[in-house]
Length: 59
Length: 225
Image (cartoon, rainbow over all chains, first blue to last red; front, side):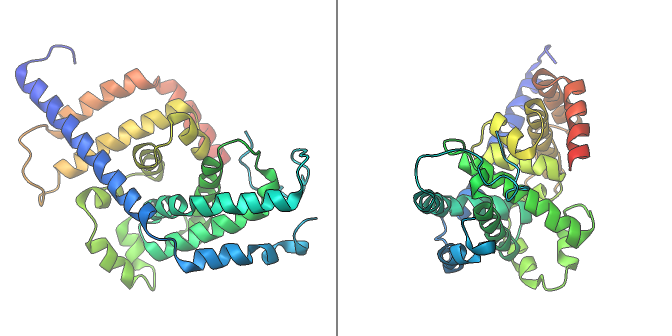
């Protein structure tokens, strides 16, 4: 892979930019979800989670 | 580092603490709350659909709460939760899909997934291409590429060697590029053919992880799963 002619360099650059685009896209999807407000059902779940303990919580 | 969720009841005294349990529980709950957005994001990335993902994230919260005495304070709670979520994802799916590989077609054959198709229509090319990857490659790429985890933390979450995570990420990138290059709806690429991309990344891969190491770790991983 070391003998780099010019077209190879261009290809490598194109691959690099593709990889960067993929990385950006992955983060965008992930971050979009992470930035959504937490749905109420999650908050309800956490509020009630103590009473869901089997054998009444602390054992 | 203890990340297993089983046997929580068997070891109620995982660590001795001077503080009282009520305070610890309150703190733990507070920490869980802060991490919900990331659990949802990881779940969505794994499942590819909101409803299933949120169910999975909620199951994870319940499991984490039940196993809270197993968590060693001061260690990485986010990684611990992601481990639980990941294990839950695979065990749910083994039950539901009988080991079928993740793909959009399979997802759409599951009854009651009409909303899933609508959601899929909005997906970007990259996200759809993700569905073509193996589970192992997809999760490694998501953890490292989107979740911001170190290779070490990702390896812990995926229960495999660090070199294995590195090679999975490299392979995932290679596969995504090949898939995207092969997509006729994308702008024609002036650049690489698949073979060239493969060679380039295989060379990177060789520098990252000796094949023997990755292979051995993969076998261990399979055996443990």
